[in-house]
Image (cartoon, rainbow, N blue to C red; front, side, top):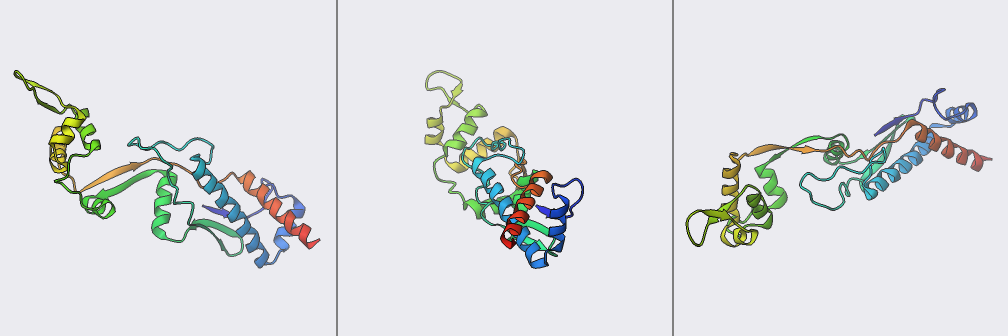
Amino acid sequence: MSLTITPNRHQALNASNQLALLKLPSAKRIRILKNLGRYERALARKRIRTQTTVDGGQFEARANGKKGRMLKRLGKTLEPFVKNANRLELKHQAALTGRIAALHQDGGSEQMSASRMARIHGTPDYNAPCSRSQAKALSAEGYKVRKAKGNGYRRASLNEIMATLSQGQAGVILRSMRDKPNKQRWEIPVAARPFLGDSADNVQRQLVSIIEQINQKRG
């Protein structure tokens, strides 16, 4: 997020505060912007804690249905940076973290690969028993087993699937049932969850408060 101070008639700064701001030496303007950055950072961190957007709505839930707080690490590394004593940027020092934050802020898609999944989660043990999530996926696709008596097939229970299939077997069967090839690269959609930002009015009100505090200390 970037905020630029250019006082004008649409902003909350009155004439005396505008003049006070312009007369301040660059070191004090930098301090004002740093204070503003820390205030905006606190707002962003609060939104992550409460899982709410800039507009006050709830974060969109995960596509896979999993619960738990989202973006919880993205607020920890936010830092305020001031440029030319008149521009505030609240951003992450690490470029990769910044790109991840921007993706979640605006939404989009992330490219995933089999090699990247292996780096993140490790190489799966294909001989290990079928996981519950795999069993649920197979059940949802209508996986069946032979009936114990008579002819025909019946839907398999989750326990049966987990007891009789390995992770490798479950993966092969699932891809076959879905008629999907074993992709090496795929796109993962990411919903927009804007946690960073503020209205111009609120930014200017906070600036007024900071400037007035400085004036009181000077007085």
